[in-house]
Length: 282
Image (cartoon, rainbow, N blue to C red; front, top):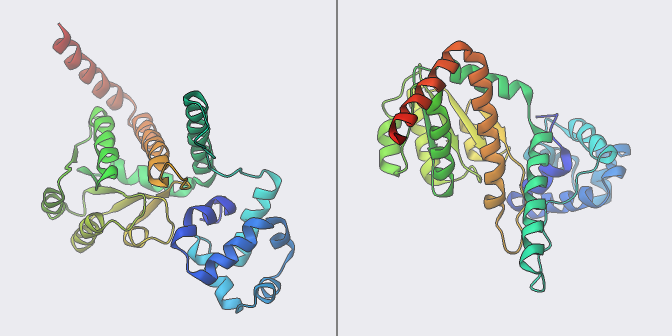
């Protein structure tokens, strides 16, 4: 988690923070370069809050402590990441709006790339490769991402499944075992349907991978491995929409690494899929 981009993580978690924590977030976002040279005591004095409040803030946005946050911010100051914000107005032409949407998506991808944790990716890939069965779960908009993940991974030759209906998800989760792996996708990490599934999986001892936007979400705490996206809400477009691009890219990365690791088995599976589809077209 310490390798995460500090400013991007603070922006991503902003709406989940309390009032005091948002004051700290505003202070850091306005002058990140000062934080690098300030002690935790100086920040607490400037904001008239307790040092423990600043420390808890660091943990809330995904860092072990103040020093870890300072290291991440130092990287930001050297190579600052611009706001993920389209700044769309009513006067914009359709082309200008399209260009701003594309720019927003590119920034979302870049911010997510910056916070990718290699150890977490390795662990997720290892779980997927060792699983007897892989099941993808998501609710609402995230169900579409789960279905896309199934569409990709069914090419791998691994046993993969996905259900879109919430009751079916719970039923299926209850049948998974410690030899299987569940991938749970939720932008907020707080979707009740997805959390219900996660609790069933925990009771069954099923290894779990979360794909979410928030480091301190309930889903992150319930899952064994967490992969994070970064997105920011705008006036005309919710952060959940922007994050889909990053979620899809994370799944693409997982699929590609899995296929590379499977080697000849992976290539044979792809060939079988292509042959089956070509027969359909004849």
